[in-house]
Length: 252
Image 1 (cartoon, rainbow, N blue to C red):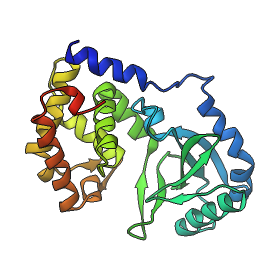
Image 2: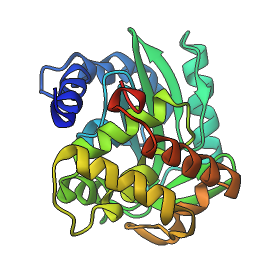
Image 3: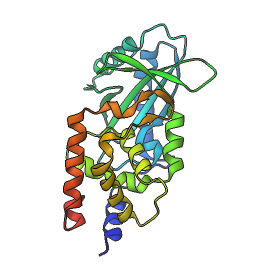
Image 4: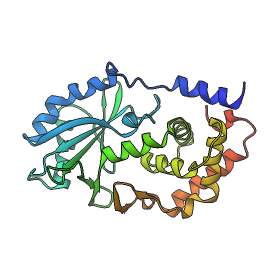
């Protein structure tokens, strides 16, 4: 079996149903009564976002991100929006878990990341969301993020790298990872295995010093999301991957 056949088999095993009939999409309907009550009439929309929407999700990873868009005239602060959503999920009988900009809940056997945000104005898709770890806020544009990742056409390579990240227990935020894969493979053509190898080389040689900017907000430096030590851990893991004798030692 060639390297590409091996990786292709893993990706087939990890394929996520993104069709209109996907059971994952029914989660929004399940949570709708809780979300509607929590939003107090200010809800604009609930839409799939993150890895699921970008085609970079794996079955063994988080199943779906739901972006909860609130109207620009929502009176609550971003911190209040975040914390009241957590409380609403708790009251509804779920066991929510606070993350940086999202709240994770388990629904019908699926992991769901809820991302609450307030639209900045009624004319654009720019939103403000709460960053819990820094107790601050940031501007984001989910539509722009999806367009950048899908437009790059590096979904397969990204999925392999995400599996490696998860299986090695590495801290590497998904959007940061997606942008690094795109940068590492900019202008590079080759087989799936050679492209993934190139990403590992980038993580070893260039990642630590690479400044990565949010394509929807130039003031948001994505590369600041990891500490020097966390970046060093990723570099060491990439070095180990590059010394492996078989792909089975890298990802399975």
